[in-house]
Image 1: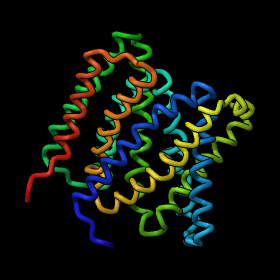
Image 2: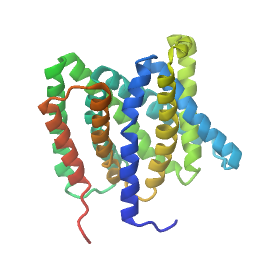
Image 3: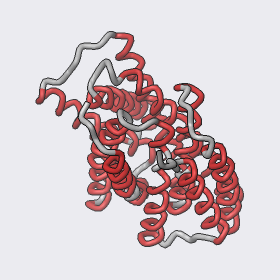
Image 4: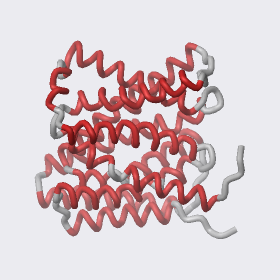
Length: 297
């Protein structure tokens, strides 16, 4: 493995999260025009096809066991497909800025799962960061309640939290497959499994496929941006970084995209932000910094 400086890895992780901060705004544009379930099928079809085409053209497919194929597909269905329902419905209910601030919980969830399942040993400051993030969540829900309702505040928080729990499971379990197949193959199988499952549900239950014609040029461009930039490039870089940084440490960088996404949501959709929401987001962000602090030497 090529030697890469810690500083370079940090810069890449920061740039990754700033880019990812545009995704909630782009997704909001799409789900204003088509149902969430149809968008889930569409986004993973696009990204899964790109990974599959790349592997086919470069002839980088690696033979894996049927068992590994099954488990990667299952992780993709739950971690990409079903998890997307939670995060996207949270986005639709609560708005971009609220979603962006709540998305800072993602690192806490992923870090906790990494510690419990992968037995990673975080620095003791992580246990200072965790309660800060939990208090921040409470303030975010209270702040959203001030400008909407308990229904919107509560359900958007629960939907996003459920989505991130599923994403966290996929994130930490992906490590066991890294030695068995290229990252592109893992992502291609997982994302195509999610796409196929949701197209099957479209045919048998949702029956929304015809609504694709409702997409405007803006909606199409936003969907393509998410499919290529977020679901392909960002995920590929994320899993590449996972080979150099522990899961609980890498996950904490998600707080950066919470800040940038909140800014994009405010600028693009004029989403209201209350003092409590800002305070809650601030506490979560402080928690992320504390939890990711690395003392010299």
